Image (cartoon, rainbow, N blue to C red; front, side, top):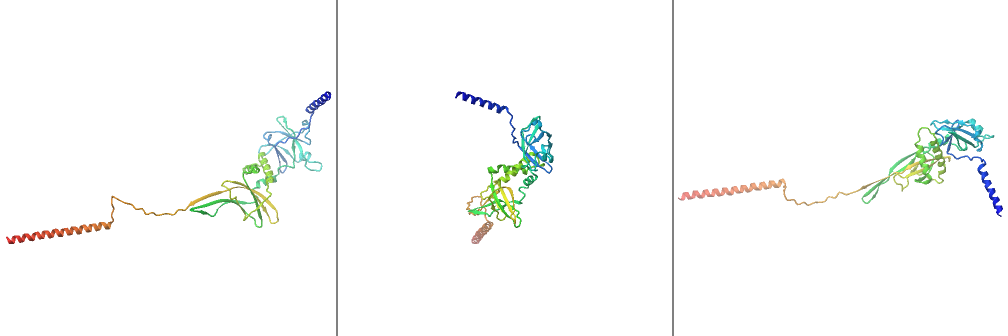
Length: 341
């Protein structure tokens, strides 16, 4: 028994040593690359190596010896990025079988005397100009206008509240019907989708830079992965924001247009809700009678002054008449006394 265990152990050790020293075919790496099909060729962008010059080579088998590869120089795109390419001659030699059908191949990149592992290149999954045009046309395939409207004021007690909300108005075509699906954000499934949409809308200059192409490709794939299955009918060509929406809430709005023949076109919009409320408090003006007691100084009415003056004059006249009577009476008495004497 001990002898058997010893023999098995020796066999295992030998097997491990053989595994370590024997050559095995290299597996293709899954490096981040993007392939763009132009009118004349395919451009292959490598996110790690595109900033500096390199050489590249193709082969049918990933186990091909590096020493047997035929390396050629990279070219530069309009943004100055270094890219590998596949022209019509290379495509015919490496990427088409005898029947002329496309087949995957392997690419090696040599940069600074270092050769990469084989990278699998499949031309059946490339970014075409149609994809680029589709992404750039997003939000414009079905014309819409975003507006605001003031709702009917609501009065409660002595307070009147007016609310302004947002909506999305479809510029409808006669005979067409419309459906929609509204997704409220944040939504984990849509986080990258919305981020990419904002970044793509801010693209400037050349659309064939690696970063732009990568984002276009990711957006395109997410677009079709997120397409809704259930739709709601659009009423009066207007899509209103949810009743519970607060000011600044964000939504993804999918819109489907169906022509009289049943053909469908789908587009997506990004809407930010608006909700502004104004309140007006109604008050009645009340007049209060206030009784004020005034001491000094006293201010009279002008009629009272005239009456007082008239009374004083009358009293003065009366006094003068009385005084005159007394004087006349005294004078008469004196005359009578002189006559007697």
